[in-house]
Length: 327
Image (tube, rainbow, N blue to C red; front, side, top):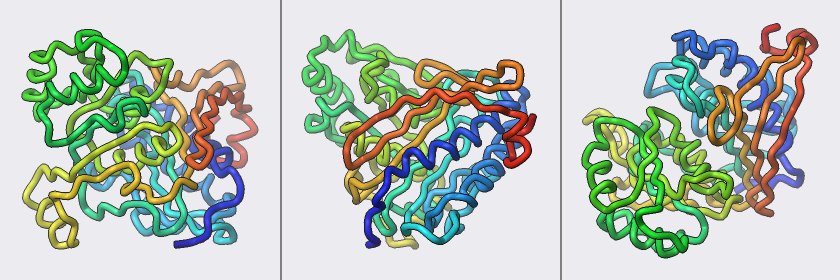
């Protein structure tokens, strides 16, 4: 494994998520998810070109949807800095952006080279994400009701007060029924389980945990954030097609293995950044005011556990001259 970075890269990579958010927010509610994603990818790639790292894209979100993407294996950065594994999702929640719904965000996670789980062609995994107080009481194979009881107890809450984030997908009909039978509350969102996982670990949010099957790339990015937030993700690859299952098995990945925060990201010296695009409960979206745009971001350093919420004012006319951001 490469030597750990010496500086706080979170403050560098947040400029990349800001650029992606500014570029894609122009497509809010316009019904074209690929156009919004493409704008974010272009802005992100352009911003990476000035960052002094020797980066390799391990997670390039977009393949499963045939969307624009930073490709797996692509080199990013100037090639003059630390060797890093990079996970990106230029628009986490492309459908949210296209339909004008809340909680679309732009996210990046980085870790020293060789420290990031590479899922290959795995697109989906079963996940359970909890805050630090409940990290030692969960089991992916336990009944939903038992996990919820243990989480509620660890958080000092009554079960009926617990709020569970779940993606509103047909595959989750049994899960939703089990949560309701247990007596917990549910927050359903159509997309965006990175935001859901982050909300479960943000004391400002009412969400207590996240359950269900979501994207594998998003799971790795989530682990990068949880390294600094102190929470836990436990997961298992869960292919949604025979082709995906065969690709995973051919790659020699064990479908029975339970993955954790520490196995998804093997170094504490990792960094995470997220910038709001369409707004919502977690990070407010891009706001345009005359020649300026306002963004809200979260940056996390895994090694120290420091979280920073950053409000930035961007001069759009100046940015348009040197970046992919449109005036």
